Length: 374
Image 1 (cartoon, one colour):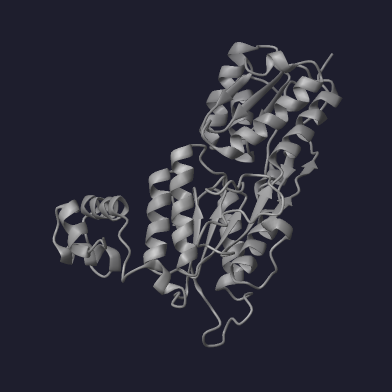
Image 2: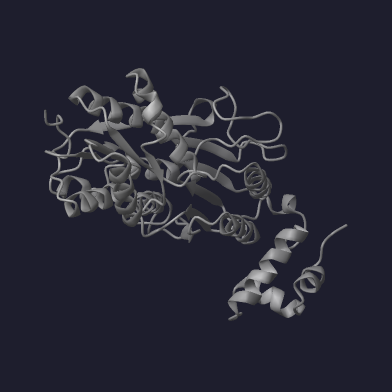
């Protein structure tokens, strides 16, 4: 049975006109009302203007780029690079009528609900392409919901690219790491999900901890990201592999603290690590921003970097080389990956074999790490 706009209005307890205003975005609507309408749209699986399959040849000039936090340089760099290939001055066809797409950045704030809502709205707007950046939330129900949304986008003719996100485990037996399969190639979706560009978070984290171990560190604290994120798990697994190979695996859990990917988390977690292990000689941070907080906490406690405690980060964000001392970190080619995602989304670059490409991580040794004293 086809769901109508009136059905959505009844579910949300608003008028059909209000539903129309929310979906078209052409009139101010109270935030609470808007959220109620969008929940009803999702609950009823409402599709604007009929079956999604009828829209396959009618995509718009809109491209959505989903990020967790646009204020975080990790996401800002990727989004900016992707936009340059979609609608900026670097994009092929820029300046010619019909040569550009309108790229919009959708900031989820890390909310799984907002991620699904944006995917729904992009489907309603018949988006030509969608780029999802950063790690995924490790929740089976959410993964299934995202897979269903991507299937509908594919049915509508959209091209989907994952940038820095592992391939989805989807219906039909597809799973992360299976060779010869397109990530997200759902029944009815064809090859619309063109590629997943996955970051080598495990390998980079392993090499970073190996660097500290080679310097002679044994009491190494780890400030991890949110427990529900794939990026967090993969980077922590790399750290665990290196520590285990050195015979120090039993110490990892005691010297690991989780928190958000922000400076405050690094500060608070480092104070907790010092409480647990006063003789700590090194701190590995989940990303460079977290590492800044770790450095602040250490200096507040009178610890010199790297003479007393070495500090390392991850991502090689632009400020990393300018900190005092310069931060040892793992470089991910964020701009290059984002630009490639943009070209893939626009069909200007061939998809990698099997639809999956691993983006390498490079160890950058700088002044914030040194051999421990004594």
